[in-house]
Figure (cartoon, each protein chain N blue to C red):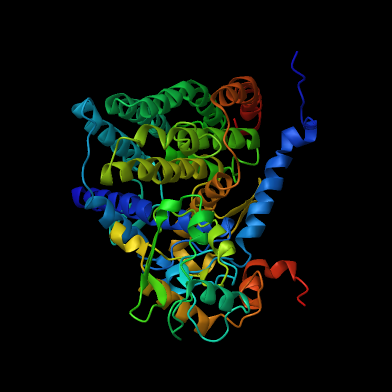
Length: 343
Length: 203
């Protein structure tokens, strides 16, 4: 059993960091083509090795530190950013249970019964990283950036918690694996009955990961990338890696689990599932999960490279006066209707 | 009292269904699948137009000097005319026209036979604004601006163009582009690359 868990850990860590680095290339290509540029083209075929070159460059760079900064907090912020973001993947189910020989393997690291609670606890910890980074840098821009992030936390964290309560009520569990199982048993992706919650979740996801239109903590036009401004080399590289790629991936995965039925194929509500990828056999589930995940990730990129930035008061206003009432209404309706249908 | 001007407020449908977001998203995705319009710069370079205001050069004497101006200036200053050398007649009109005159360092010398010619002509490109006034002022069509625009150098000294460099640029220019028609863009392909979708009528 230990061996299986170790293998899972290795796969997840490799996947998170490797994929995160590779997604920088995806983003640069996408951003380039939106602006009618080709993006990186020189290193490797169509810039395929660009992430390696970037990593090499960042690692060999000089490690600068602001003279009046707080060195302990400065380094702690990096760890606080990376570790919770990577830990979220411990509770994400990548596919259905399968068996190799006599061992049956669940492709999820720990199927704890408070999985979703863990996800949002870790998500909240990422904010500490940003606040600490800004404080420890002892720089105006960094501090403004982290204060902005701390300012919008109270808007999106409340909203995201209320948004996910709808699917939780429908599934009757907090375990991510069980939520997907329930969706398959009920023959229903929860997005069909929770579209409002899904949109609100997307809103909060963009705010949490610092993506446009809610990237006020970075705001390169005003704050020269905000809280990361005093970081250099790979320390600088880690923050966008974590915020823009690892967190977007983990929150997209949670969205797939909650609303899009995890590894289940295309759903016709209450009737069943249609699987155009049936020829892949046991791999079909994993492929569906990856497809949904990449679709959500590309949607995030698409929004990022289209929209302008909101002001902090506008974000708070949207969150408290539009999104929160919507989710509350949604929550009440779900709580009334769900027992009538499924219990 | 400040007059407050608003855009037309969004209708309820637009607010609920994010129609304005959709409009923006559809624009970006349509652009994403079109052809890219960039040049892969170090590997692929656009030819600048002939009128481009780049580094300076001295056109050399090759029998195509503007007449009768050139002969008049040569006679007035008793300039030694030698084919293949700079047309400069040391009139200093370029220096007088220049908004930063100290960037020019011009001296003439007297040859043993009593004729004169330019001996030092330095232009400090660190001070130059590339306004082209000196080119307009030049009475013998000697000083001109070439299409050389990749001018990075390793030291400040390299940014000073001396007489031999200016003559070299001038000879190169006269070989390459002197006879081209004077147009905004070097060739139609360069223009089409940038604005192919406007399909301009060329004539």
